Image 1 (cartoon, rainbow, N blue to C red):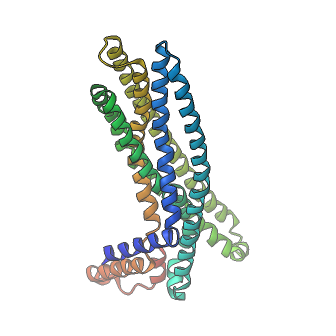
Image 2 (image 1 turned 60 degrees about the horizontal axis):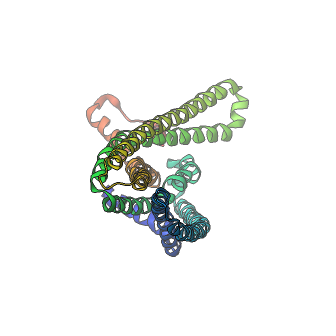
Image 3 (image 1 turned 90 degrees about the horizontal axis):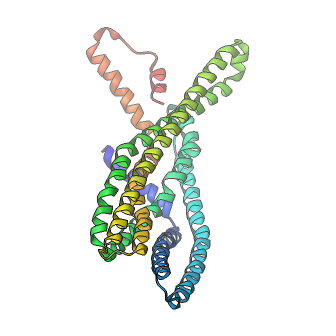
Length: 353
């Protein structure tokens, strides 16, 4: 039953993202793939120009320069188009998502709203939507672009040197392993920041709504202590997230450098020993290794962020929390006969906010 509700929530989420927004998404997807694949063209041109420079015939150089000029013009045109369609897709999707959340809020009863509290909805419309806008919507097009340039790079590498391709793929497993191992850790840190932010927002809301009571009972010192405690916890979670991201970046960059240098050294050896590899092909492989390594290192943490951002749109509903609370009360009533009637029921419900 719960899985069915989650699937229904995902379908509603997808509908509000793509409602009257399919064409912009398809355009952003196509332009993103074209921009990334244009890098393959420039890598090929670098290889050809390098090999021409090693010879004595200047005629091919002018033809390559003309192709380069056309490619650069097309690249700038695609970038301009990207700057138009992608922000429009994200803006419309976020606007529709916020409207969807607020519509669901207006459909709730007073009792249901009081059980859940407004802090969750404030967080959903601020911190959580920022995470979805940053980590979910833009990555929908990034996955397809990374896949296209990855397979395109592999095809070019196989065409020029199968032996060097096998070595490059083998060396690429090192940064990929680093990415797989560390990618989920960043998602955990992001979840902790979101939870702390929701608690901070709820605490500030409660303090401000009870401002007159605080002043009447001269509880400013206690209020300041609570504020400082929640604020310190929130900032500490942000610090831990930043430190984790930096360590992941450091490990990934180090592994990528080792893989690229390994391919470069092996390619230089094959070129010097005359095994069908030219200096231009060696440079081409170094360029293409960037496009092979990027999906391998970026995809695991990217998928983790997608899952995390998606989970923030599918939080446990107030009714689910209410049922959990009722189940706990029933459990204690059965196993602790001397417990008696729980008269602080509303306090227990607040614990599940």
